[in-house]
Length: 184
Image 1 (cartoon, rainbow, N blue to C red):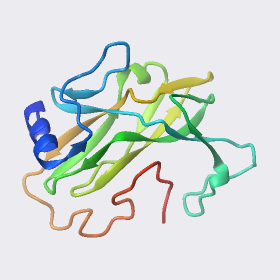
Image 2 (cartoon, helix red, strand yellow):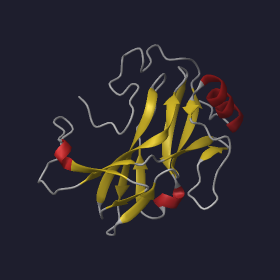
Image 3 (spheres, rainbow, N blue to C red):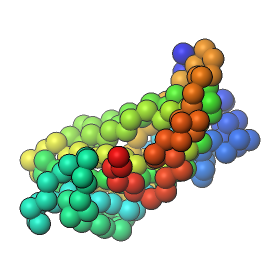
């Protein structure tokens, strides 16, 4: 599975709508960088957040998820409590080609501050805003910034298209917009 370079990412974004909106080169003046890089795309964090809290004594259960588990915020800066977690989403909307798998890695600027970003792979023919899981692993409150880089997506091209894509099996997170909560 080759890792796809900037030239391929640009062409797929501009001609086929793979990433919208698309930033053609790294932006880094006074911010955590985002945009096209050599072998990936650094996505931005939107300003919608779901911050986990235990104010109402909720239990996090993926089979019976309660919206009482978090508080909602719309802001340019989100402060995640110590040893806590937030859900957010990318500014960018992704449309993954049928023969591509996309892996997401957190940005080193955040990782060096104890902030870890997790996303499961974007499967062939999945599309939507990517819901991001952001963990603050430190004993201190930690900030993340909307409209700045949060993670990098790396595009891996398969030797051939899969027999069944995410779209073919009508995956439950297909075409998600906004921060999407766990579904069964």
